[in-house]
Amino acid sequence: MDTGVGTAYGTFGELLQGELPEEAGDFLVTLPVARWARASFRCDPAMGDVIVRPSHKEKARRLACLILEEAPGMTGGVLTVNSVIPEGKGLASSSADLVATARAVGRALRLDMPPSRIEGLLRLIEPTDGVLYPGIVAFHHRAVRLRAMLGSLPAMSVVGVDEGGAVDTVDFNRIPKPFTPADRREYADLLNRLSGAVRSRDLAEVGRVATRSALMNQPLRYKRLLEPMREICRDAGGLGVAVGHSGTALGVLLDAADPAYPHRATAVARACGDLAGAVAVYRTLSFPNAVSHGGRTVG
Image (cartoon, rainbow, N blue to C red):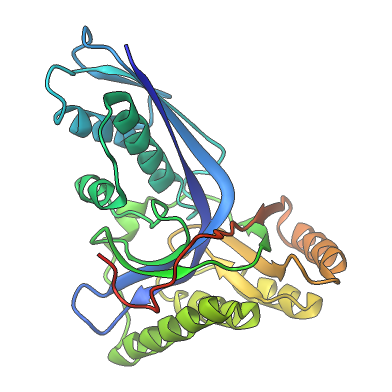
């Protein structure tokens, strides 16, 4: 019986999420962080189904069953999913579970699992973040389709808080979007600005775009702590505020290479603790081999 293992990173919400003027314009731009989901799958031809542990990871089990349908003679096995990504907070926990599962099952069955194939499988399950790609990407999450590879950024830290509760991604994506044509044009401009900022490694511009996206998302998923977090960011000289647009997390972006970073991080963490209690610090991921395609559609 063969066993395969797969991993996938999470995100701290999104740098940008909204709707473009074009048809099927829902999109997001990922903010990868060093939080991981790990899946292992052990094939067992004697089993007639897939058992998943923990048992509530039903979406991962469904995905494993879909992949097994492509492997003659393989009808079951044991799928184990371990993750340190909080669920229901807008941190891509479900997407990371699914991508890790696809990679684990593919390796166990010796099936190639390029991103395009994983996209096709995830499209059958739920709206998905772009965590299957190595780098910062613009991604049509409802259509589960890559829009563009934007590249990579120098390391940042995100000092984050959680407003509490949980959000179901599928339910959130059913909510009608209140965006006007002017909003959609602004989202297109923000995407162009962010694409250029990633190419030029302009963290200050990245922070400005992230903050504006958080503000524009307020009518859709209001966050009571957004204004206090913006004030904390301004007082500490942070880059901006990033949020889980479909979740409950908010965080101040800081340049990890800034000589004043230790002072800024301490000040932000103290203020966030006073504001919300528990504070978590996330480190963003950099991808040295990530290739920018200049904002053009890839694939």
